[in-house]
Length: 323
Ligand code: GLV
Ligand code: GLV
Image (cartoon, rainbow, N blue to C red; front, side, top):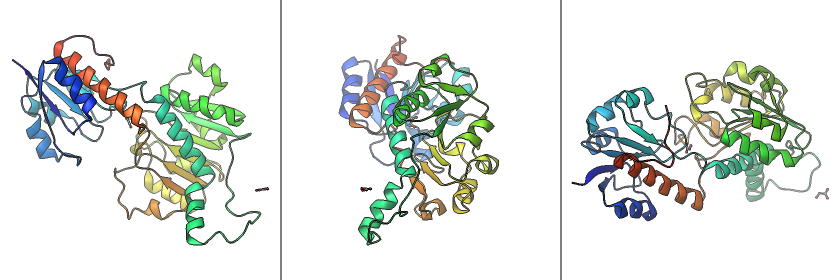
């Protein structure tokens, strides 16, 4: 008898092919590009043996109970897993698949692009060209901050943080600071200096947040954090929105406490179009597109389908979260 699999979103054909070729499951899916409402999710998961979800689906005890005792595996199409209630999942003996490694390069690349776009004011410059603000070449017009000779601080030197560090060093960065729970041997490759968070915040010209969302990092970038930053400092976040207290960030940006911020992640997502942060010229907001290259997304979908099959069949999963 075929096992039941529920997908919380349409996935590209590559993923569907992998699932059907295995011949072990019947797939039902939320047949839309719009996110699932909670009630639909609770209904959709009923009786499922496997669940393939996105980072925007909150999988908690209520969803697990709605799924019932068949559920063996949850495969998320993301490297982050803060949307999964890991303790509840563990208690029920459910396995979890995720997509580390395959999106590291794409996400690091996007983060560096966002850093440069923010520091050199690219969106603002493009806007000035379109609205006639470009009246002549002016010595101090549209000036920003460059990486050459600067100090960059990476909060969370994991896979993605390290890939970001490798990419910024060739721009002539003078010092690379990082903070986190432990010092990393591999930081030597980028001459990374392990420092306390406070030191990183006060000494960096550019701060890149690349840590996972945990109870310790939630709200970490708050008023006290921004007040320690240089007035010329540029802040970039491509991890999770709730690492930042957005009211405090707004205050820091609008008062000139810090120079600029680039965000690929926000609270909530999507950020409402009337959000105060969007009124600021020195805040560049992207719609959570870190891993969004055609090839990376294709590989992520295939990997999450393979993770799901491994979990259903009780065999190895290519990327199983161990907890
Ligand atoms: C993206 O944010 C991911 O976790 O994959
Ligand atoms: C800039 O275009 C310069 O020539 O200085």
